[in-house]
Image (cartoon, rainbow, N blue to C red; front, side, top):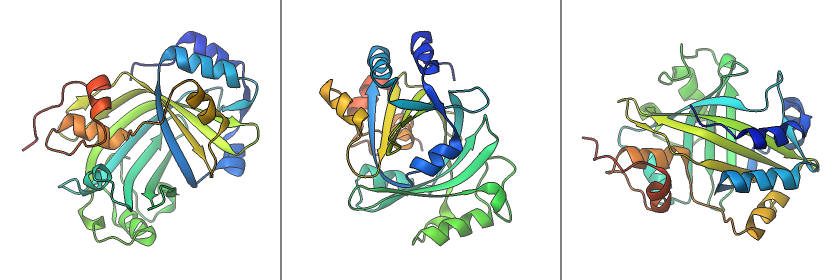
Length: 265
């Protein structure tokens, strides 16, 4: 991962009031929420940080304000979960194992989207399970599959396998009102089990709020920046394999990803 926030933006972030992970989980864990994603330029991000420097806090742990994430997404061999998202099935989900590299925490997460566009996230620390993999990027264990079955009504669990690893750096902002969060992701790097890689050069902002649009959403809209359909997993998979549907990500693929690869056979 080579892409980082520029020095001027990081200086502004370091002037912000800080917040702990416990405070975020207490005030705005938002496991049921509305998510909106935006792709912005360095200049747009710098302007946003300048606007909200006094009304948001930044997550800080052990002196760090940008954190390395490493996520392995699991899917069926025919990529059913990718296809459900591409075809906008009313009810769909993702299964991932996310390693928070700077804290040593690893979570199994099941992220569900319901027919009203709301996101519900279920998660459990791997250490709480009876069995856990040697690596966060290995296949699912029996205990992990049992947890998935406990939160989903699906017959696909036994078919899930590692499909894509995605690494990136994240900075998290919390509104002083405590009703919304905003994450800033850079340095996206994706790699599939065959070693094929993608490295899109983009900054992704994601807002997370219970119902209403947040102040950051409204600021972005007022500056002509609209939500975009982007999935780190699905867009990267579509870039790696041209046989997969890419219905909703053509613009992102053309602009930020390398030329789409040939169908994988």
